[in-house]
Length: 423
Image 1: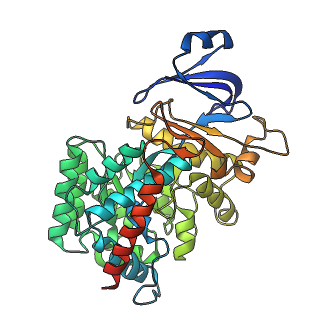
Image 2: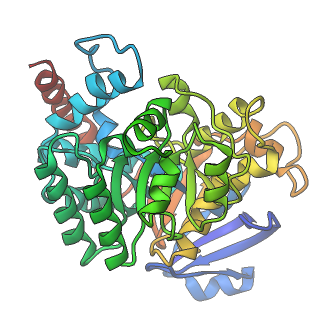
Image 3: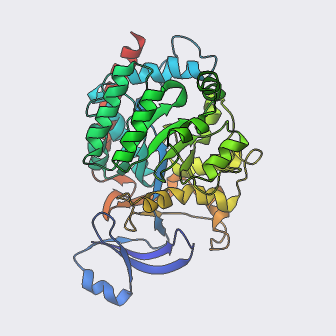
């Protein structure tokens, strides 16, 4: 057990402040207990972290990540300068994902999990692609995440773009993984998924009581393709195949939607995940939650692993295009916990905590918390992270793996990947 002594605890839902000592139980989905100073004597053998002057609250979660992009940072320019979103995919991300091998996937996952942990996230929902190394790809990622101590909800990005044989391999690998793991059925996007593959994916999701995880209308080209080839819009197509029936289903991006599509989403149990920085980077448009209901959460889309940064971008970039306010920015940031709890996914229990060393020139209270969250908090204030009751980051140092060694090795793996992409 761990004792967080002299903590200022902030309840992530009510934002109530408590000055207390916290007993943290170890194990998946275990609890925490507030104890008095006099009770500390009973826990002499527990590890004690003195949180005097620090804040303690529930750790964070990433609603949409891409492990496979981890080794892209600093890579050379593509062979052709992309002129639109589809070319960004073709000349950058689809070039990269085709080059991934087992070693590259492992180091992508290890470095992503480390980055998540150090930024305060103990849970990540990932959407993976490696068309020439599909077999065991999710197992490799899961093992790496568990090494670091970050819980996960994975899927493989099933798509027809590399041939129907690869699509079937993606379906088969997903089923194999679902038999013994919590997971989703991943699809790339409507414009690279034919009717037969979409039908099989929905059937697989239903068979294992899972959900879909798919990019939706990230760019106008997704809608244009759907209208040209299927005479309907993307969300209507998903609905017709039964893809909007599960509360486990995650629709990524959802930028270019009609009012009817927004209504369909609002009237369904599915969740939408917003990725503002990625949208800005790809110049595909701005997200708006108007008409989508309350099932909105935030992701990073593989740009980084810092959810506090994602919340800021969602708020600031959304001032002219979205219906986002102080409270709803924090709400979207925290909704990943509601998604996981609603669907009984494991690994996001109350014993997942983050310790924040936040020094402010102004008072912090329940009444002004949102202002501090948006204008003061950043990942630099994360000092300690507890995942499933175990310390995975202490005094800003990862405890579970040798971060320096992994990063040094990942440099070499990244160079291999970049050379392969240039070939």
